[in-house]
Image (cartoon, rainbow, N blue to C red):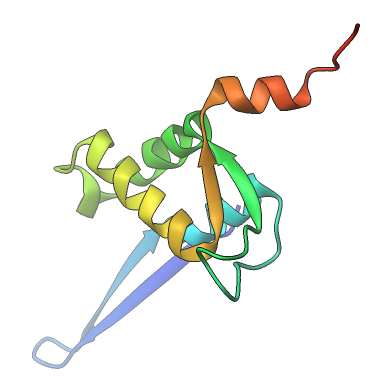
Length: 106
């Protein structure tokens, strides 16, 4: 997993503050959807699909960050869905994804 480091230099104490963060939401969305980049025309071109269960997994990872501890999982999930929409990734329910993957026998 890729990690992001934020380094902050302070002039008054001439100190350094380091903070390790998880990767941005777009990294997880691209990884879960199996795409290399988002859509150039979001809303018109769908790059990939992601399930609600995968969004919940990403929300749980982001909830561990200190700056997200006070935000509910539902709010984080809605924010992730907005990021998916702006990247051209369609959010589908788990049942729809299972039906599309299961072989149909007649």
